[in-house]
Image (cartoon, one colour):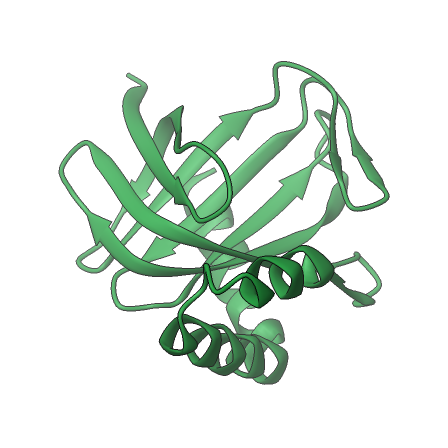
Length: 162
């Protein structure tokens, strides 16, 4: 039986968002959620078609959410990392503050940084604290150093449950 799970995403630059997902797996310090796209979407220059599946790993204490995105037939679209802060995992929901900067990795491992210009513009207004900017920078470095192992862990969890 599919268990519904909520994702509460607090944004710096726009209204907060709530997404209804499927709880795919749970561990002591993580949840793995599954979401099926109900409409076409865009991640940078990459088109995500309706029916694509996202597996999202939320780990307590981490400063990012790691996504594995696949076509409806299982072909890999890519991996996306949302840099965030304040991850709180509950019984039926996860909540965090999205810090705007995302890192996209193609199936070939090519990295694209998303929303840096928007973050820089928003920070120039004083709307992003120096503490948050330092956090974003530290999490970007961690992802750059560890993305292969993070992706491997995510793929392993998906394969174990699927």
